[in-house]
Length: 198
Image (cartoon, rainbow, N blue to C red; front, side, top):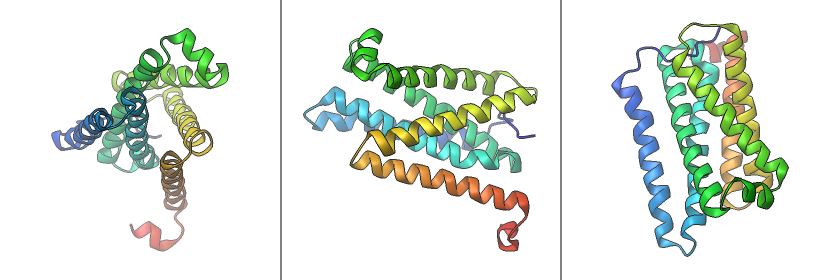
């Protein structure tokens, strides 16, 4: 069974995720000061921050059962990516769109619904991650399903609904995670021998 609850998180592990989150979020909030569209660019930048942190969390996730350190880092990056996503949602819903009803009207029901569902599920998952300490099969399945859903929402949004630098980020995000999953499958099946040594 895969570990889910971070165990004995060290200062180094916490600092690694927190410093990455802090530096990226500060940059996302300050960089738009140099542009013409302050609020719009802050909203865009915060989803890039979320995507970067989420990418790290999802690349590490397939390897959680191999090491407590990897498990802890995956959980920390997942949690800080969630905080970044909440900042993005706040900016998008209340600053750009002017409220929940206007968000549905301007984004359309399918896309807005997917985003709000993602926020709810991700919040539930972070709460389960940090508050439930016993390993239970239904929690492991919940973690896996929510991570797959989150990956799909971000990959499709960045690759299909966005263009330019967001699409490049989406390609890197998707490729890195798929490579990590493929590597984990190779390690788990024990082939080839070269992979097993590492």
